[in-house]
Image (cartoon, rainbow, N blue to C red):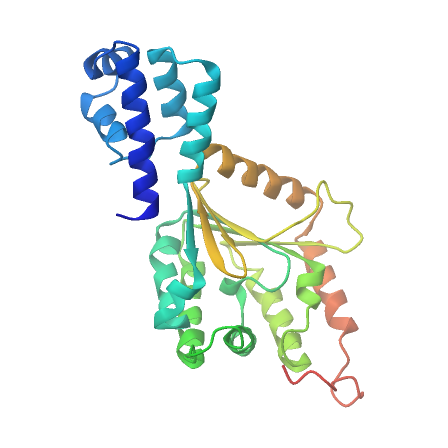
Length: 290
């Protein structure tokens, strides 16, 4: 039994005990809520994760105090956050993680991505991606499949050309300026952004350094069809599915998008970053071996 499954069982046991204390049968509660009896059974035995709406409805039907309801809500929300360490994910290499992303991206109609430190993976050039994986490999002993990872990342980018999809990429100007690779590679990457930003499926926005932010940008995150948020930390990937959590990230994304430059404005910011990069032969390439 996984830790997450164990948590669902504990929550379900508490719900069942509270229902018994209230003198109600499972049939009574299911009928009050208009639920199939099977749904209540799955929740009380930990076979289904309870949403915030499930807990609120159940608490009203059983008549538990508000304080108990709020405790159950907190427990349910914590169980809808999946923590998946990079150590576990990368035991088969970088390429396996890249390939595992493809089904989710293929099944997604609207993807919104925000990055504060680098160019989003779906927009990376082969050379830029190679440097990103090489940098990450220094933190992951034994993970060396860099070429295979780059090839897998480029295959992921095929999804950008699928009709009927919408990709909204939001990046900070500092992310575009971050020197994670040799300057010629960064220069080529920025030029690729100018091209990809013209795709029918892609909307590109850049937050300039002088923009007044509604809130500290914090960390990057990816939103899939307003139902899942992925957040990468140094040690793990977090998957958030709780409706309140997802709505918070959607609102944060929208407010950041409002202060960003789009269209010609985004292209102007990218061009500005390009103009700041030293040209080959000017002596400004030293120390950028990446």
